[in-house]
Image (cartoon, rainbow, N blue to C red):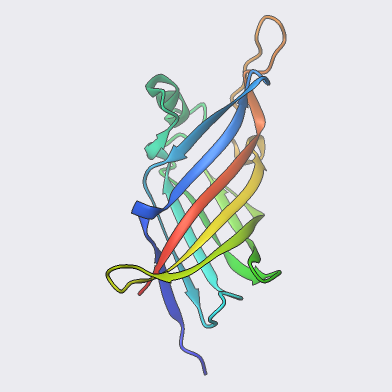
Length: 176
């Protein structure tokens, strides 16, 4: 019987980003600065690995303090009441360097099944002897489905915030 190996996210070499349309004409990029996660696998190639992840909603950063405070408010994430976004799921190998990550995504008090596309970047040992692997994880959600329903329309009829949110995570995990 194989022994499970645990990997944890290296936050100094990882990033969690999102992109959403503003006024339907441009894209605003933001990130979560505080997050954690782990991968547990019994195979060398991560097929069948269990994944858990969470991000602190209060750590949201769009490079504009007033917008960040609005995103933390009850209009969006309600960070005081719902401090975490979380995901738990399983990696399934699709090709030599591609995986599907299927599981449950929770935002506020809403949990829905979700699937991310995952590109495996490879494995390397760093200068300190740590065994690391890298992944790029992408997906797209409709924010309305997760209770992020605030909206406004300009005088000209333009939507202020788009419903589709692209999620991009570049993750480096270190073997424990």
